[in-house]
Length: 442
Image (cartoon, rainbow, N blue to C red; front, side, top):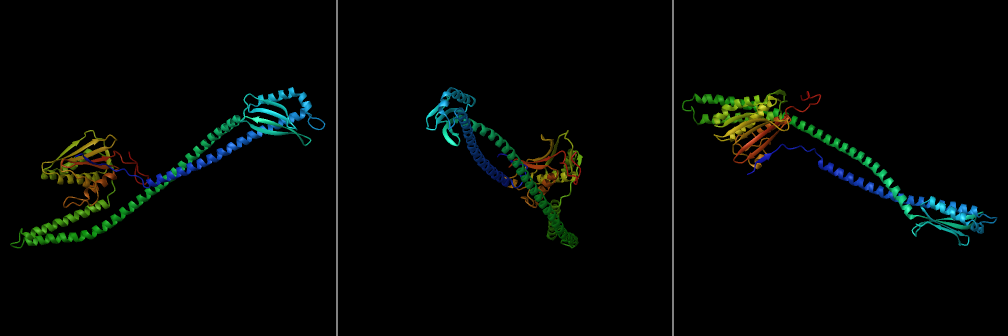
């Protein structure tokens, strides 16, 4: 069977789904807005460019019309005979205009009767050319007309050039605007998430304080009658011991059983108080190996009595660690105590220390006991959960709480029938505290 592993769970800030939905809605609205602005703006650009080109063609036709009127002006209007006499000069002028204006493809001049006077075309003239008209007017009387052909390709090139220029400018401004909006949205979401985290922390602190207050009051109310019961049971046992025929009898065994239950309830209350109102850790930079050695020495007699070997495998050059000696020892005592109770006689529990690859220090408690089933492994750190008769279900919860107080975490690996390994990962230095919560990590 493959090993069962329980790693430290990463905390995900609340509202992750809401953040994704907010970004999706924002992106959809922004995309629709950009598309609408693009469609409207570039359609207007096309129309505007077309109108500009038409105006340019119309102005050129009007200029040629003024030149023709000036060339053939007579007493009653335009004398087209005079224009014909100067036709070579007129043709030269028209060709010069076509040469100076590549977008102009043709110029046609007609008299008042619609008869052609001059017709000059460039080799690139086509049926697609746009035609601009200007009337030959003298003394307010129409005398003919000028037709100027403007290149449709030139119009499209100008439109495309204008469109590219505008597209670049719009894209640049839109990109800056989108970036600013995204940054603003991100900052707002960050504030919302931070506010939620602070609110959860506040609620957690309030719940812990309330739990501690209720626990303290309840423990006080229970301890007093328990102490009285224990004293009365001891007195009753002493009196029964002095009665002939009752020494060591069934009554005495019953009293001792009751005293054991009273003691168990007292231990449960003590553990509950330790979990509900944990003491504030006092950090010191010390040798973790020394704490492990002292803890193993303290438990050696209990392990020897249970027939279980407790061995140490400590890294000699283990770096110093900033930790609360009492809390770390308590966490080790809880885990080692559980191991001693489940490992059968002849088994082994190994206490190991080593440096981790991430700069942390690792402590492992490995046993070759029966292992832990998957459905149980997922719940072993829950308060008051225990599969062992007489267990309080608080030992591992307290151990995890104390390790997390140090900014560390507990991992568990277990294989049924082969044993369990608890792995404590502790940072060498605690995280920097706020100005009102103590000194920064060294």
